[in-house]
Length: 122
Length: 106
Image (cartoon, chains in turn orange, purple):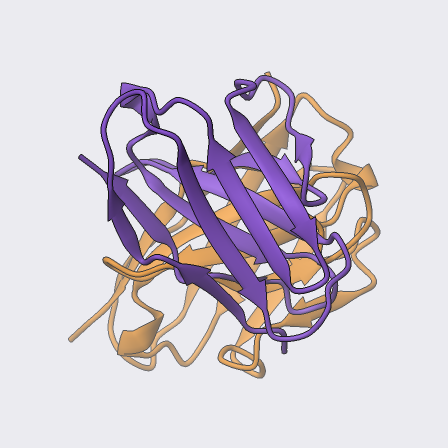
């Protein structure tokens, strides 16, 4: 079964850091762009970041630019999101999501993980 | 960035009803429009991509239409499992942006 599984969420103080991981299975990970999408409590979906299949081309939402870094290890079929200088408004469930058709950063997302919860609070 | 506006924000319906949700883009996005369904506590699920293409495994009662700036998602005969929140998303350019969601409830 094609699957994405996130991990690494938790409770962190404002200004702190956290690294999320997203492990992929049952598809050729290195062929697809992957994104992070978040959902604040009771709110809608917000795209956070994406990375090309090779890892050479990352992209970020303005709200996280300069604070978050996306990366991937295609040898481990794993995506990462390093989050620094966290703010209360970053509190959300973070999903990783696979591009539907290939190496396109703004693609439809056909496979989603179950999400990992990030809470930023003192 | 492309702004996506859905209407209505919520609607009440009954099993068997035909339901239509609309999505408007702030600029033309051709047919780069996708629809998702999300139930409470679950990840979103892709229903429709490229405005009108049904994702594999999605029931045929779901259909999408539109191009340019105006799009619609229709459910021909609402089933109990269809009570959920629906989002549109443009995939025309980075950053991909979502509508605010439409909650379909009893």
